[in-house]
Image (cartoon, rainbow, N blue to C red):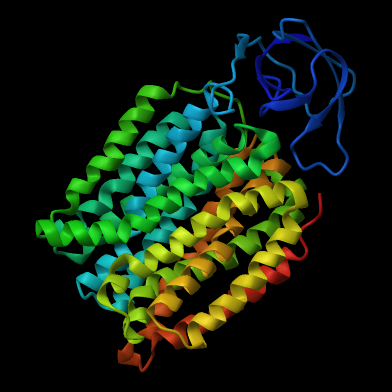
Length: 463
């Protein structure tokens, strides 16, 4: 069998991508012979008989290679050059565009928790709105993931970013039903963008999937960190005209529409997709469980954080964005180190260490002494420990099922967040003073989620 393929040379490693490979395959060295397939987390690395010509434009594959599928027609051959950044030319621009898109989306989805406090909405009702929007929106991630694997990436990336910006118009409406629709639209947009972009990022350099996903997630955490502060500032400065924030997702969506070419359509049946996932049910199930627990802690804490800090007598700047920024910026600092550690040490060790640390820090935050600055440091450290679960889980899942990165990202991001979206309604009710509750009591129940993360993480198979 002979086919043309895309060839990218990076620091002595050749990455091959064509119709016969579901994702780029890294080949150690250049020349002829048998090479080892890297970067997919296989217990025993498969050998594939590959022959490259001197121009690195032809690929000959022979022998038994069950991971290969017959190519219906050859793809055009290209040879990428290495840019000044150290990344192959084209990969850096792709990564930056994905990072900017993630920043725009998460800049918007962090708005509702602080707006409900600014507007003085009932905690139970605001939590119910967040829960319904989160469940309905995130439930669609599985569909969006399959669409991405079938070649609909550009539509999902552009449409998702634009739709996520709907929440910026929420102060301009007065009725709760309209507010609910805007929150739902933003949730659906986020769900369209996340699995598509995360899956794409993980394939940029497959052997370093953890680092690539970590860099991608950093953009989102940066946007999420500044979302509440920026929204509050614009709200007060303009008398509620926060719709000007919509310019950010709109401009970035336009840049993606201009820069990214449509992907070729792939014939991927849902039955085949389902069969592959069922075959990996145990490992994916454990990763899924950790993500549900980690997301539940994150969603519950972010939803009640302004009210929790208010009960503790924190200053106004900390209530309306400062505490949230500390938590999320801390999470962004943990992403790349955690991704690198997972690439080298495996997911199990990193997950157990992260969640043990998160449990200790969360307990200290709720019940330990401390003033304003110590609370900020605690929030940053807790964000780093709990938030880093995301990069480890998504990169490990994508490593295990190459070629179905959109579906894997949806399974490990969308569905867990769908379940975690139930948490605001629960903790909002438990914290409501009308029912005799408080935020410390409500948040303390999230300690169960930490124990679940540790238990499931300790059973994740080693690579």
